[in-house]
Image 1: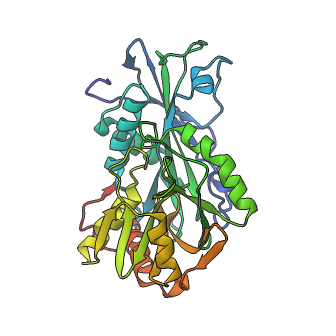
Image 2: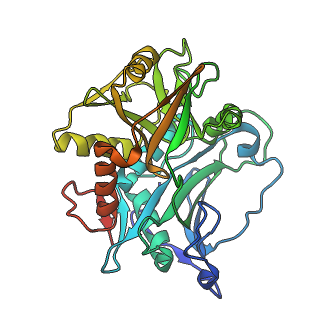
Image 3: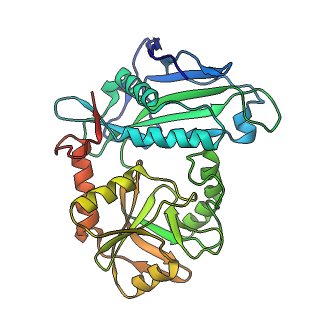
Length: 356
């Protein structure tokens, strides 16, 4: 672990690129801020972290992560309030999940306090990159990968932890169409579905490609054993409103990623007195409710997507169209609440914001 007093070596970029950014047309994940934080793990301990100009990495062809997949990441967003303060939403949950991913992937851990402090220092270095425009944010990507230059299947002895940031607009610009997947599998019991590891996303690319060819934006994954139960979507957890109740798959399985935004949606809904059920949801139950018109809202919840309303759900030869997204009370109300909270426009009654 790092020493108690965290010291960071800093090298500033000679000339900022911020004036080259088209702030009215920000694609997601393609524009990067001036600096990044890099910290190496070797000889059984973390070395001194360094903030330096954003740039390419020099990797050995036998870098362990490339061959054996020891790679994990997190995602969060920073926004600004009207006074210019930077706000980061629930970084403690990301820190906890990163720690759990480290343990599952046999990687050295970071304390939650160190993780948050490194995030804060990195964002503060480029705080002028945090957009002030509504609907925009500074996306934060902390990640770690194995760096041994060795061909052999074992946990690496060395690692690199990096944080970079990028100003972003909306991940989904409009409601999405999703398909219930009954053949391909995202995660299995006993696997690494709960870890935010790169391989999970690589495995999803091909079935997602097939779905896009059929006109869908994303998949709704089902359980690996029988494909009878709803799990999550490709970039987000899923939430349904059935018979006036908010229903979402429980996270007591190791096949579903524990989502920060989904957890926040559940907490907000409960505080408002909205009935919430976190439980097993069968495909049969959902499809029956769709056929009978009892699904009045459906949306994805994730850091990148925030609240992504679902317009249509495909199942085999059926395509179910949900109510007009503009008329949906639950998802619109929660989306507005979270958006205003992250912009500092409403009281942080839950104590979720890191402000600096």
